[in-house]
Length: 139
Image (cartoon, rainbow, N blue to C red):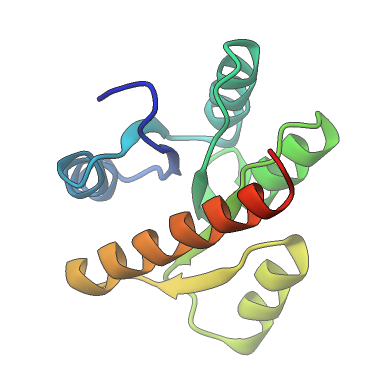
């Protein structure tokens, strides 16, 4: 992928899910990094920031072996390296989980499994919205 392609960080501990997401995203012109834990996601965000590579979209599984996926978003903000857009992807379909994700800064909460067509349409919208917002602010 060219360096100008939007960078998507997928934080997901299921190899099956992360592999499928990688294929979908790369086939539609996105650069993808996979992290299977809170710690690996923090390292990926730090590496991207050190390289001057902004994370355009952060896709977060909430239930990870080493913690809550929302901790990734919180850590990125504390380090001054937040993604342009963060989206939670979870198997928990309840109002409390949704409210917690939105309060943490996610723009949306997707309940897995998400149909590929719906997922790709939403990714396109999120990245377009983030680009428009960034352009409006002179970045």
